[in-house]
Image (cartoon, rainbow, N blue to C red; front, top):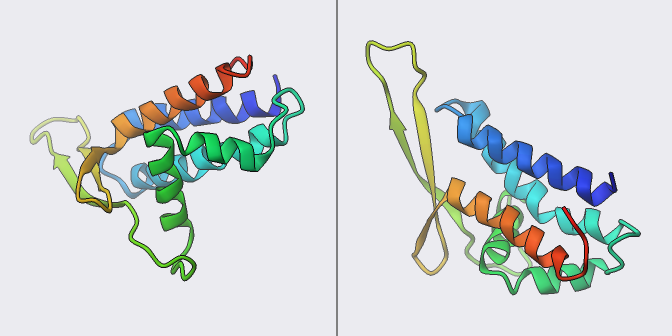
Length: 146
């Protein structure tokens, strides 16, 4: 397995965790970690000799995919306490809908929603799934199977 394939498998495991996550802090941590790892997949791919693209090339092309561009924005916004260059708005988790199953052993579930700088919203799990799909499509264009 190549380094980029290993990192891609890690992304898929994070998506599985997000699907199973309850309303815990750990579930939220996995969600945030997914977006940081998903954007930094570009670094793994650029350092994988089987890919043959520079980090700049991968990031530029990735940003042509709307979900990957949002991923870059989320990763930058959550990685830094305060970003000063450039100063801008970021996508942020603005809703956490919790469903509790009273009288059941089933744990509470949470659905997270990102609000983007333009005011639109995206379901976090659906966005994560699209990011995985887009990375696969982007590298498939170069004959790299994930």
